[in-house]
Length: 82
Image (cartoon, rainbow, N blue to C red):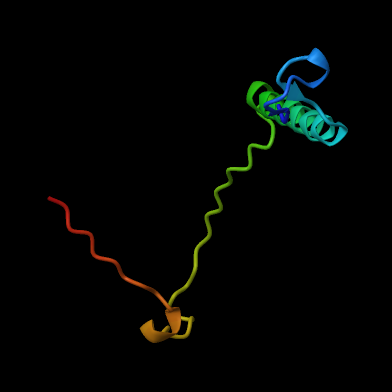
């Protein structure tokens, strides 16, 4: 993966030369991708990490203090579509 092309035919073994650092980085990337894919497949197949949650409660708004619009720090965007 990280073998760089060189213009000389180094030891008559082709036009790329692999270094120990390149092998380490390539191995790390392959292991990382393998672990990532296995974990994502496990979540997909077994339905793990499903954290969707709904909480319903009644709030008496008469007892709450009024909120000023300036304190909310909201930005309102207008979208104009053709």
